[in-house]
Length: 355
Image 1: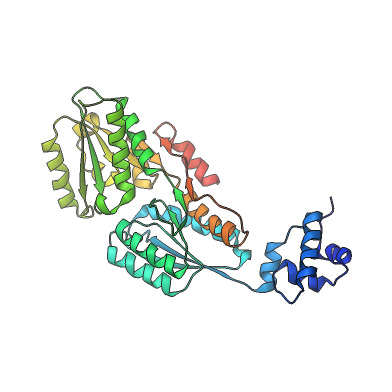
Image 2: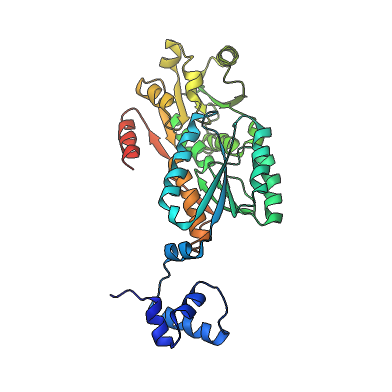
């Protein structure tokens, strides 16, 4: 079927191609009656606007501010960053300007400063991981007043200023961890949830994971398998981290499983004795190199993969679909939760390398 062009519409409407172009691209200087006639003909003919060509012709640009943890401060964030770069390369013809505002994931002050810098640049939208819940909600209030929508990835918080969220359902991921532990527990065994990061009270995705884990145990009446949770933010200090781990072992001789709420399982698992490795079941998150190594060595039992590359990729594509292609997008976009074991980890590695 022949593709409908501006020339075809102009011939039927009895106007110049320039007039049709002004109507199609919303540049005005055309009477209302003529504009309605042109749009009616375009619709009847099934005309599809060439957005790449029209963007190039208009020299219009779209700015997105990317406020994201620096991969230097947390290796996990190299994966969402990869997805962002892949998407930007794919849609580079649309005149998108991406400005980066990286922050140390452990520094609340840096997070706030970079959001301030992003606001000052007057972007069309901000893509961010709202890792500090309370501060993110404050800035979202400011964003609503300024008319700057947020696209969030990895960390789900609810606010009318959020255009869309892309990432895991954190509650469900904790619930899934509960099911994995259930397969191996006996009466009296204890589960320890460990958050190596800032406090759960200001990290919505971490607290949602622990809530999901506890919900599974409650719903399955596993009263004889209590869940205890700990948090520790000085995980880069090996001596202090060792003291933290030894205190947990001393307090919980019936400990059977350890649930790590983020990608930092390797930090403590690398401290394990041979007895720890034989005794404990470990569930953690994210296919980063140190975790994959421990999975292959049978020191981590399960990794829950949250598709971080896809999070970054879809964050950008949602920006394109909403602002440029004018498509409706879903406000909440949960990604699959993959259970990765020693037996299937190479499949996932090969899949990610090919895609």
